Picture 1: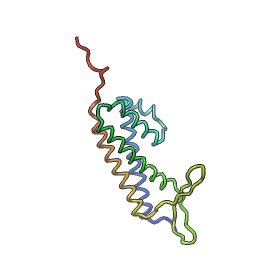
Picture 2: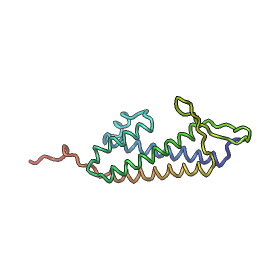
Picture 3: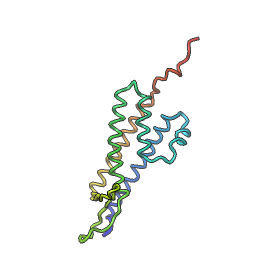
Picture 4: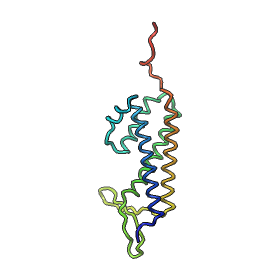
Length: 162
């Protein structure tokens, strides 16, 4: 029995919403690197999501060291983002095949050098919950981005007295 239309729609939602999250995070990090986004793109071109997420955390520390609340918010957001990344990867990179003897489609992900097998919860409800969680993390990222629009103090950029 193949994946149901509801399961396929939910997996599509996961894919599209994660793509939006990834683009939003990339744009924010590129802006942290330089006002010219092309420089940020060049620096992080081809890097996996997890590496860009690490760069966001690293870059935010010196940029917003004066704003402990924002740094804490970014840290909490990155932890939630790591969670949805792991859950998303489990679904998207699972090997889907009929279970024996039920015939129901089951997703399995082989993890690590020990080749542990993790079964994926594939109900439309669980898959849609993941898509909604990704949307929530993406929304929080937009709020963080707005909070970072106020340029951080950069003493070396201040005008010198005449």
